Length: 556
Image 1: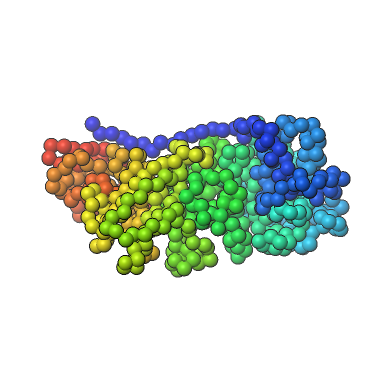
Image 2 (image 1 turned 90 degrees about the vertical axis):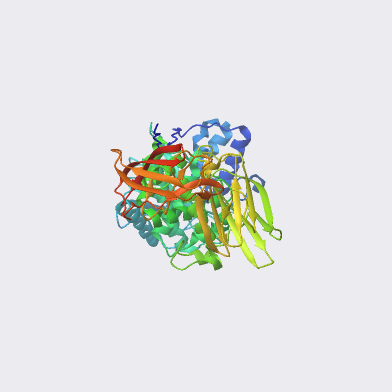
């Protein structure tokens, strides 16, 4: 019987207002929000003692503002009163309209919140952001606020001053619709002194960042309570897309490169901003459209599923690209390769391995636990011959990894200087073997002295179908096929059309992929031509035992 394997997309529809916070959690977000809006409170005559304020480097206050507003009715009356004051649009003494006519920028000409940079240049920055994100990339503009702020133009308020906290800006939600989208306005810092980027350049990237938040909240969905990391990844990447010469994101990269072993969905502000480079990779490989497609899917499914679905639509998978991301992140700083991976990789920090292990014996087995959807680097140092072998172990358990999970996934990895049973031959000096309770959620990549010697071989022991499927010429080098667990000699592989026309037939040698027996095929007919795009049937035969199934080939 031929088994047809279809990709499974896990869809989890979650409303924007899904979680009720405990009193301690309410206190935490209350004081966090007051700390970044202290000068606005002072301006309104509400003075809070300093001990009530907690210092934090916020960068973007959008997620915090949305969380406070979602829970506004749950605060005690005295705190509600103060928060409602903060969610009242600022009153300023003047405003200008941007050259495009889309934005109105409100500001004070004097006082503690008066801008120290050119308001006209800020207006140009918002127009540039609109032109790139709406006119070029095709995102819909944020919806009209129906006259709030004095007219139908989108309102920007220069109304965040420098306190202990460093907030570039925030997009404040206002009126929600039944589908959990909302109107909004933007608050932006008036000074930017002491920030990673200062002055008008900081204002420029803030314009690109916050304007996309207005697009997200106004046209797709506010699910910032559970998928907030995704909002920040996109908005921070827009800073670079609109203003590639301003490298503000450099300031957050250490938070990511020191923690790539955390789940992809980790909720940590600085790390979320740094993860914008994930979108740099996607844009480089698939174009800007894949990011927009993810937002189109967001109202129907959680962010991680939207990312996974968009990659499947582009002939890849989340696991494959998370593995690729781990490789891209490895080749930074002095390891950067001109013309490959990240354009600015030489200026990025180095990844931090989860462990550095001396390899001074003939065999070394390590046991570790990994997080869902994480890249884990283990470095073996052979001081006897001055070799360094780094193993990148990518877990891509999207099923359990929608939220930041505390679950850990065990694995064993063995490195040896001689052949080992069911092991991989990495070079004439090294052999390896990987095993885990569920091998189907892992990729293993091995890098010897900064040269990839095994690029993300799939661990196929738990699979009962051809991998990868779809197979894409130019992106995938080989197809791997499951075989009977006890084959003898070579294995016969036959590839048929659905009408049972034979395209390929050959006896192939058995190979080991991360310790598992398989046969591999390069996707070419017996006459070395490529196959047309379509569905094909495969049958492997060893003695009296056969395996069979279907696979998909893309020939673009």
